[in-house]
Amino acid sequence: MTQRRLPDLTRRRLAASLGLVGLVAGTAWAQPSDDTARPIRWIVPFPTGAIADVVARAIGAQLTIDTGQPVQIENRPGGNTALAALEAARAPADGHTVLSADNGMWVFNPALYRSLSYSPSRDFTPVTQLVRLPMVLLVGPASGVRDARAFIEDARAFPGRFSFASAGNGSAQHLAMALLAREAGLEMVHVPYRSAGPALVEVAGGQLPFAMGELATARRFIQGGRLRVLAVANPARLAQWPGVPTFAELGLPKVEAAIFHGLVAPAGTPPEVVARLQRAVASALHNPVVQRRLAEAGVEPVGGTPAEFETLLARESARWHPLIRALKLSLD
Image 1 (cartoon, rainbow, N blue to C red):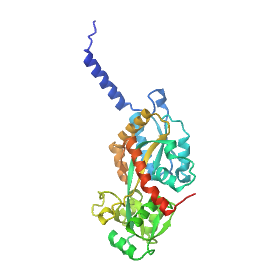
Image 2: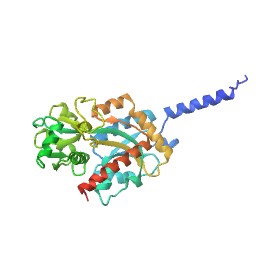
Image 3: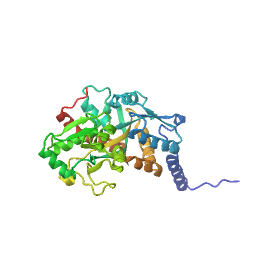
Image 4: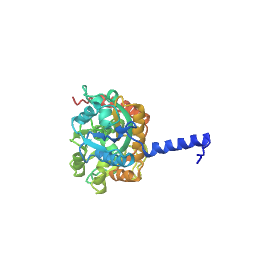
């Protein structure tokens, strides 16, 4: 039986369509070869149960389903993210090892440590911003402060009278409140804790009056009525609290702060591998199951391009490094 040949144009269109289907359905993290059967090692610089861990596990589980490639989450807390960063930096740049990177690891640490054991810009290449956690000004229910404007007026009138809690020296919570103090002309006493949880417990219990915190950690305190949101350090009001003003609405447009978590790969990872990583993660982030789980954790999914993430990292470094120098903060 004679085979009928398709016209050249039809054959070219069919080949292109099949190639596109193959790219979407079989997107692999690493280079397309037998090597894709190897597990992906996703290093998280925080303990199990931390927000970064929740995000990595939610996305990693969906990536395994989408690509058929196992994703293994490896928690490496310690050294203010340095232990995980060193481990990832030493890994082969082949797309089989990735690292969760937050503000502290990429933006704050280079300004806080005179001698850092890794270099973010030298040792890693950005893949994508995973999520964003807006910061909010929080007060305990026992406080007599009515709203953010009253807080700012009282703090100006009584320099040094108010104290605030944070997750530690040089933490995002500390720096966000320091930014507010600088922009509003306030003098407050900083009381650092070992992490965000204990700091918020103290504010909720009335031991300290204020804190700047991210919604993911403060969510259960707010829902339980143990903390109130006075203002949001976000360009726009948050859907969860439409009646809570932004700092820009209070005349402080530069008071914007958020914690971000992103994904980076060892320096030297081929651009085409980085691009495949980004596409696979963005697809997982848009999965309804993943979006629902992240929403329950109080985080906003992003999933932008490597170039967009690199721009964010540069912009955040330019914003926060001068403040860290002005505060004369050092963790060495």
